Length: 321
Image 1 (cartoon, rainbow, N blue to C red):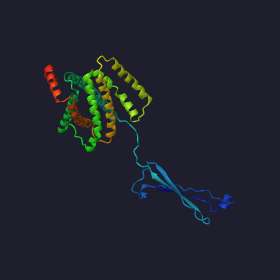
Image 2: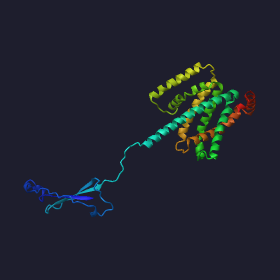
Image 3: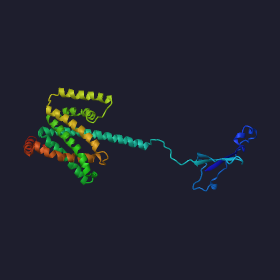
Image 4: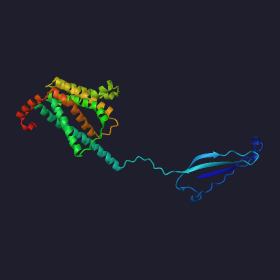
């Protein structure tokens, strides 16, 4: 949409401006023409309800001074585009979805904690009757792997799409996971479950220290101060434990370190991998099972397992299974 404004300019040269200033004609302005939609040969119509914005102004060079000079100013204008306004309005549906997501995550944490308690109790009962933590750890990984394989076969869970590169990235994570899993089970076989988990509650302190001194990460002072009650509580529990056992204590410490490195390797190696959390943990358990099985056979062996099995069944009966 183009409109123009014309005004008269003095025909005298600039040198005679002072002597001829009285004869200088005043600028005359012509009203802008009314441009209607039917006069425009355009592909779109101009809406009277939309504002007009000036986009550019062009001035044409004057003619020679001998002639009457006319200077024409062309103003180019454009009609406001139909652009959506960016307004941050939280709709009730979005708020409800966010609240439901928080409740879902809370239920995950509660379920994880409850099942962890049940697992530890039954694990301790098994270890009291069958004190072979390497085989117990192997059977735990085997049970989890079997459950996931059945879930994939029956389409209960989606089968992950993984390649050889994925398993290479998962290998150091599985090694750390295997060490941490076995060390925790060895610890529980020597000391009370509560003591093992008191020591394992110091994992945040290990995570910060390893990240600081090995990876060079820095944290604010408040993070270091928050570790003091954790370290103090674990130290107090270790000093006052009646049935203290060095193997059980060291097993919990090694488990903390191993799980810290597992988390570090997992974050570094699994970036960009499109595998769900459940399938990722299933693949991790399967690879850990392959790593742990030969070590369990070498450390304990089938003969010790057979003798321990007969002893457990004779004392407890079929409930042991």
